[in-house]
Image (cartoon, rainbow, N blue to C red):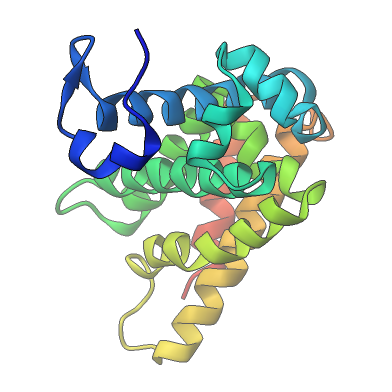
Length: 207
């Protein structure tokens, strides 16, 4: 059974074919390619992500790859932004209501560390691979403002907006560097030590 011709794509979007709509099948294939990219990054890093390896991992043809993404770099950028947003949401939702600053800081750090460890593929994608790929590096700069908003929750609101922005960027960079060193094996400390130090650093640095 074949799908409707591309020329009929618009009216076919909601047409049920084999139990699902065309839009649902396209979304499923897009997800399959993103998951395949994560698997490959976890095993080989971004250098192992090619259109051919993605198709093989996802069990799909390159026709379906280009249905969702114009290039490998577009897929990598999309994947990075989606995972970063997922981590941001997890951290934002972990902030305890009515908690003091230390509790907020610990919640931010512990949730971020858990996000990196629960799925090491995502930890590697966020902290290590941007140093090896220009598309991922660009995506990193694009999502920095998202994470700096978390820092602003625990910065004295009387401080000027520009200074709070600079504090957010520098703190996010410091935490990112710690995570990179830890996940890459250059920082041989325990998870507890990493969390405790990060909280202590934030407490000492933030006004």
